[in-house]
Image (cartoon, rainbow, N blue to C red; front, top):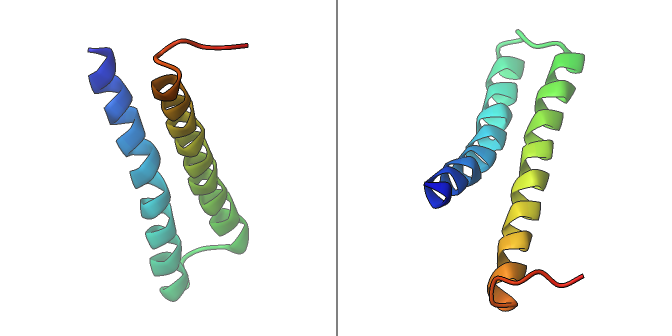
Length: 71
């Protein structure tokens, strides 16, 4: 169960930034988006990318160390 939820979260953290970027572009082209809203949306997408990167780095460290954490 935990692997499935981890994969789901990983996919979400990759899809949200893409959706936010596309939404900002489309809404900007249609002149339906204020600058402040665009920055907030892109910030949310960037935060998701950062979280996704951190979680994938953590998984790589655990697989390289045999699943054991070292302090």
